[in-house]
Length: 416
Image 1: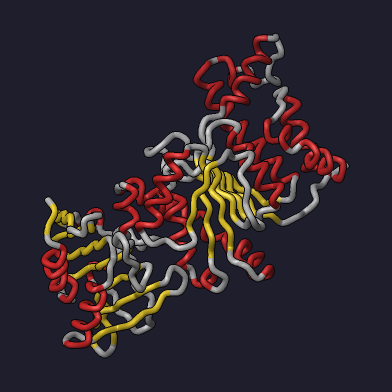
Image 2: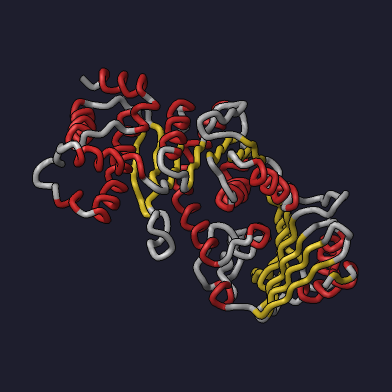
């Protein structure tokens, strides 16, 4: 039931000021017709040499500012100032409860309170100061993006989704430096494009994490989510505005026809079905994107080609007939073969590639991710022969090779 907003905010105040029980407080989003002074604010207790302090980290969406407040008038004033800001969402987690407050369009408060689940508390250890001590409830595994971030609530991302977000960010983290270097050299913000973003929970997460990354903060970041569904784009746009996520936008379009207004530094394509993944990889190659992360979904195209070759009496290469004799094995093998061919093609076209586990197979059988970094290296003869022998043995016409016919022809000619 809606509650009086002033009363609901007043009830949060003692929770935020109790540094013995507070785990963290998060404020984000905006109220209808109002704009807070910050895109996001986070409060948490930290132990410094000078004693317990209430740490407040505010950000404009690009640059975080950290202040440590002593208990008493200093902390009181800091909390009162944040509660007075027209944030649209508050998330307050203590050692025994979680309180979520959302401001409605009518200016009332929708409040949900639940008991704290220790299994779901995964706060990150503060690194704001070398003096910071680790509190007992900060022991669990550090997450790259705070599991209590209001964006998870807004997106309806439960514990499994939060774990997928962390797995994805850990795959992005080692390669983002190459993309940042390109943006810095060009003197512009980093541009991330998510092709076929769908409900965009990873788009939101990637933008949030990148915006707070110290290297990215030097240049700034823009993230564009592309999806063919207008209703999904409208929904994601509303959520981004409500969460105060500056620099994040969504546009309607197909993967093949999506238009952007500057060089693209990071291309994401997560669970795009069948040859839609190939379309995304083709766009990335033609954009010369430094970093590409693609988690394919279904792999029907190669499976159809292998099945057709069998029907025409063209047997698989000896002694691999058993791989395609049974339908379920043929389907699984086609998945592996598809991604192996994609990886070989990207290597031909100047990328260093590794295919890694995206999420644990308990969550989804489609758990492979192709991660590629552009090096511009020319292919040698051995690489050319490996690709040609692979597609020749299995009588394949890879969709990605068809989409990039000119680029592949040049690469094969260079390697001759």
